[in-house]
Image (cartoon, rainbow, N blue to C red):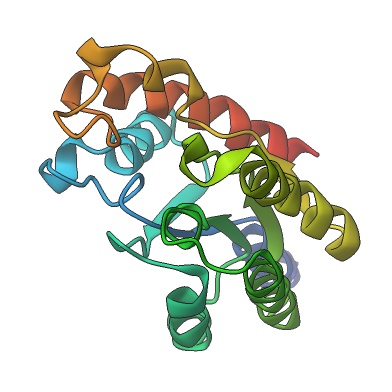
Amino acid sequence: MMHSILRFIFVLLLVIKPLTAAADNTILILGDSLSAAYGLKQEQGWVKLLQDKYDAEQANVQLINASISGETTGGALRRLEGLLNEFSPSHVLIELGGNDGLRGFPIKKLQDNLTSLVQTSKQADAQVAIMEIHIPPNYGPRYTGMFTESFTKIADETNSYLMPFFVLKVATDNSLMQNDNIHPNKTAQPILRDEMYKSINDWLDD
């Protein structure tokens, strides 16, 4: 009798363990300097602060920060397959496009790259979120408008989750920005963490 009970418990553990592993939310953050803690120590950036928050809550969320300052959608596309193979993420967050826009890259190329980033991620069985990026109106209202609309367009076409731009609340406050007026400073990072905490949780619950 005792042997049968032990055997039942052993089989039950074999069943439960894969289900627990499958519930893991491993999020690959494919971003640029806004997520790479530009001008700051890595532990001061919003990604590390958010991971600390999840860890404190014992939440089943792991953030893999693959962000690089100056990254473009094309550069990320060249790196993506290797990152997917290395980390096998359940989710991919694409926080890219700002550098494409600041360099005046063609809108069609931006859209093609975003589409390829999504398709490559989905082929690896990852759920995908595209963050809507905003840029200064340096290139005129036509280019800026087409740029911002690209993120909604590609999210709709690829059935991806559209995430709001997380810097909007701090971008107009000089006390929260570094001297270049492009990158949030250390004081802004907890605000960004809280913005992303809500956005990511909404995404995971979607």
